[in-house]
Amino acid sequence: MDSLRTKKRIALDCEMVDVGTNLRRDIVARVSLVDEHLQCVYDKYVKPTKTVTDYRTAITGITKLKLEREGIDFNIVQRDVKRLIAGCVVVGHSLDYDFKVLNLDHPDEDVIDTSRIDPFKSLTNKGHTPGLKFLAQRFLNVNIQQGQHSSITDAKVAMKLSLMAIPKRQ
Image 1: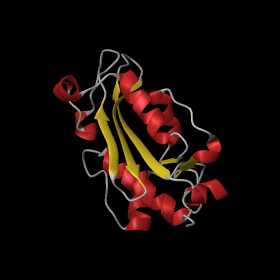
Image 2: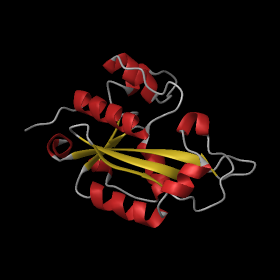
Image 3: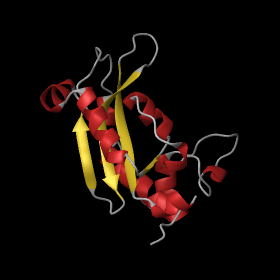
Image 4: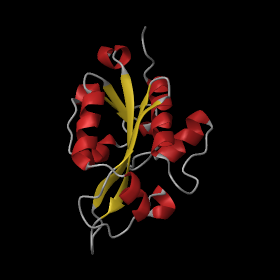
């Protein structure tokens, strides 16, 4: 727990698109990293590695044209993210999914997942994970995810929540 309070923190959030045909299957389409001062330190669109069946534009804001024009190779994004989070505490909401689509591992002791820490997880019943939108409204009095999601905004909210729940020690 001490390393969570003393190490540098970086928040991670991804937006995904669907490459499934009958069943939903996600791949990463955008990756954002925010530092503990709420400054965006990385924000990249990712070229799809498979044929996209649903860009989920209404939620993600991502379009085929945006990925064609601004997307960079998945391996480059993966390498960059791995380098930027090395030695840091990674903060986010339901991070297992972000790590999965990035095909990255990070030590459990260096992860703060706002969906799993008290006082946040105790707000739900029946073992459900509290949504980031709910936590932002309840604890920060901020409305997020009104229409299209922003991975930068979501990473900032996760960082604020982590600093509230597990304050840093100087």
